[in-house]
Image (cartoon, rainbow, N blue to C red; front, side):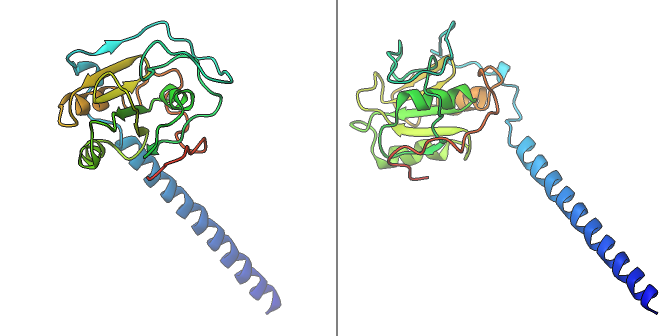
Length: 195
């Protein structure tokens, strides 16, 4: 009788462990499917963007202090050792941390707060995915809205410019970034993070 109870307890324990392992595997498969299906379905190489600025030969060293970038806002280059967490910011963010996020395949959409109001910011946000994107004000931009990815930029007069969506499709989580797919969280939350 005691041996039978022990055998039943052992069988229940194995069934519980087996069920738990199977549950974890199913959750992992679901997460993997969701993440892999989040990539754009259009071949990014086939997207042509008018007036796209491309910069080559960008270095990607980790540095301390400020960097004097050739572009405003920067589209790559040496950067801080800690990346900026992706998200929406209501205050300007440190260039050096944002460039590190670009290195990971993020898209950085900046807007001139003297030109783009809150409705414009909402219009920008509505066109972007929830991950691997940074949105922030950038006073004194050469254009009201600028979308940047590693080595690439497009300058726009309005959040309604169709090139914003095209740029995101082409460069979001791009394998052309030096460290594509590296983390977009776990870095620095700059002041003013709202989402």
